[in-house]
Every structure is written in C-alpha cells, then in structure tokens.
Length: 174
Image (tube, rainbow, N blue to C red):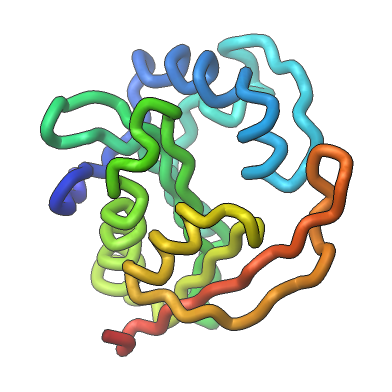
C-alpha cells in the first residue's frame, strides 16, 4: 500500500466494487461531471462497470483509496494515459460522498505524485477539472500543481457548457 498522511492507495478488492458501484456509479450528477460524458445505467458487477477489478498496465494504474484513520474505503484514484516516452500521465481522483471535504483529495493527489515521480520515474503529471469544482482546484493547488489554462465551454455537463481548468506538476516542482 502507498501511504500518505490521511490515505492509503491499494489494489481494488472484491468487497470494494459493490460499494463504489452503489455510491459513485448511481450518483448521476457526480458521474456526469467527473467523466465528461453522459451518465448511463450500468448493471452491478458487469464488464461495463468502471469500478470492476482491473490490473494495472503500461497505460493505467488504478487504486482504491482507504482512509487510514478508519481503514475504510474512501474512493478511487488513478494514473491514466501513462506515456513512458514523454514520461507523463494524468491524475484522477473520485471520493465517496462521506469522504469529501475532509482534506483527503489533496493527500490522494500527493500520494499519486509520489508514485508517478518516484516509483514510475515520470516527469510530468497533469490533471483537469470543471471550473466550478472548487474542492478539486484547491486540492490540485495544495499538492503543487500549477494552473496551465482554461478550456472555455469545453464540457457539456448536465444541460450547459462549463469551462475546464488544466493543471500540471513537474517532477522538480516544489
């Protein structure tokens, strides 16, 4: 397990899947805002589930997030689009509703940075979020990410266009 101050990142366990499916997949607003595509109903335990157990590969390293103080499943984290030639990847975090607003997001991002930079030897990590996702913007900035730009009206989300904010952190950044 990779450990931060508040969270641990570990492989997904069979017991995690139904919890994640119930609390994240069935949350239409969060799913639509997080994944940049319309929500669709997915039967629990099927191949279509975003939360099924998958193993890491050259392009993706998925994790379950555990709150260390309670040893409770708090959400998911991932390094996506891993590019070994350019030594870059994209950071993703999604927490269960009960674990939002507790500072866990920042710690998850910091642990993913440690994993990406120190373990994988990457040089650049990127992340993006909707411009009105103030919690994720704050987590990115507290974890040392710098705002690189705004993609105006980039995301069609729940009936309107929303700006998307792009962030990045380099291995040598403080």
